[in-house]
Image (cartoon, rainbow, N blue to C red; front, side, top):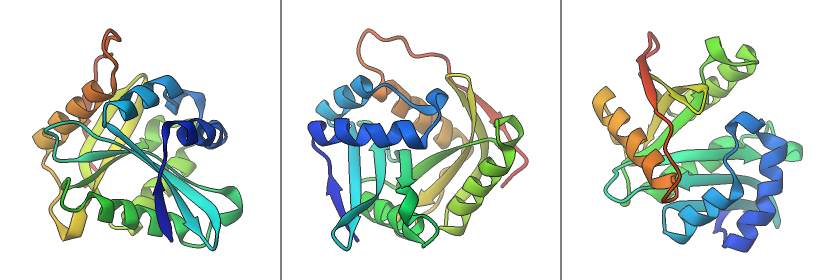
Length: 192
């Protein structure tokens, strides 16, 4: 599997897949991604295997932040169920090594998700791939997320306060100048 970092034009083309793979409430506008990418705070990747694209993963970053946010991850429908998602996640964590401490991951919190079973499966996928729950949920743009971390190179997951600081920093960095940042709220959870 090889990772290919996308140009802005390629990102715009892959955005069509995002419409298929994520509900409207979870999709940020393409223009926000492109502005962040232009300022070096967004790294979209497509992953290729056997000469064809099989998945994409987008990272949001911020100056001075020790963690990257896994903004989106999806496997092409025809390639699902074969372990590609796990390999993509591990490759993204490898790409973080030496630059950030790892990946912060947001998954819909099952108790608040429109499809609680799908949310549990998603969290289970990330946990099987090595991500650890952080004991925090966030509320972002009206969607409640369970927070997990996948440390790079066997590192350590962030504590609660570090998690909150990192998420706040990352969301501020993704917001273009002049666009107000909606309040982010955080909640402690039982899951650890």
